[in-house]
View 1 (cartoon, rainbow, N blue to C red):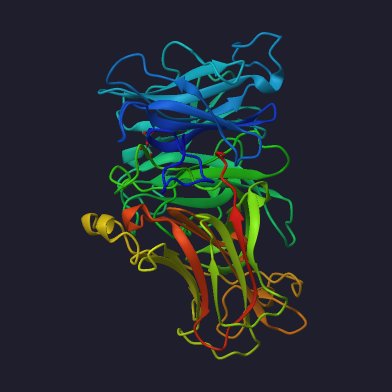
View 2: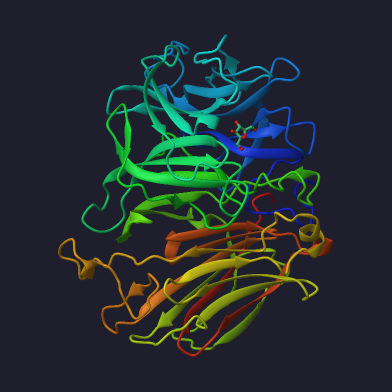
Length: 529
Ligand code: FRU
């Protein structure tokens, strides 16, 4: 049977066998979400890159399809890229009998020993692709890749973003037909440069809450590898304006999309229905992805994420608008409830047995009473234990100025971690001050929740207490943590020794200033059964 290995994640997409990396070609077409991905069909390490393919109707349950795009020659690779719907047949690839929303055009990088060039392939049935001969963009470059194309409403033409990887540049081109492209602008040397830029993505995201509620704004995401501050691969992004030719960031703040180490090659779906933004990322890191102890496959994609923008108290370091990043509605895979607190539960410690459910969702709400005098000892955490009770992975929030959320995997998988100095044990991210629109009237500081040494908790207007929500979605060998519904997100893989899976979870509150007011633990049903 497939997908039954003990450490194999059950609610995340992974290929049946061999090595996967970046998500590619994300496009919604005729009721179907397409996920293509960088895939080596012959080995459990990177190389021999193809586009693997899977489809879903809810972004959780995936059906594997045959390889969509394969190289013609040995030594060549079909590298990352994206896909669009050519509704108006601007390419001329389709005939009138293909429904408009089934006209899929993929754009990818062909990698050879001597160049990286950009190419097209198209499909009328969402399964079989035909290559358009020759390159549509070439620059006599070996580090020029990862096209992200979209139909630009502002200028009524196609736009593609590409990475000039080792020049730390994103170059934008425009085209009427996806075949003839003209360079229109560059976004160069912003943020943390690392060694190279990869996988750019320019997309629209709705603002959530406040005066701009529902307004769509542009976000440019860039993947960096190697060179993340905590090592290896990471994703940074800018919020800004796109005028049809040029992207202008609203500030120079450097924002990371995920505070931990295993969230890379982020990509958003083209043609999502409604004014919504959905995305996914490769849940691993180039520092160790080719050594992780899983077989016969390596790597998973992250949970699908829904993105919004929210206002936070502005700082020069972080700017004001932050991308909120939370799992797409988990109700599609919710299983039985393993624990649910009675209202107002104030227990400080709680243990929940997982009854063999290696995939689960734990959500707790902590209350910080008004004027609580908190210190860095004010910690609330989840500890997820392996079957032997000796290994665990932890996540929590630590109050203070600033408050942080962390993931700690140093108690998990000694044998793997010992061989991999880059398998960072503890990562953390800063919790921001959220905009408090209940009291906001104009652009002033009162607009933001500034409690007593506060996290960016939700302020309750009746009791002035702040509420901090911590959610962890755990799936056998991966944990994804979300604070306050995605204000802060962290993704970490972990590998318990001897292929063990999670068996129980404890919740503890470190001192009596924080209260646990709500706790729910739910099993998540395998998407493969
Ligand atoms: C990012 C990346 C891309 C490239 C692909 C090759 O992880 O290096 O830049 O297109 O992987 O598999």
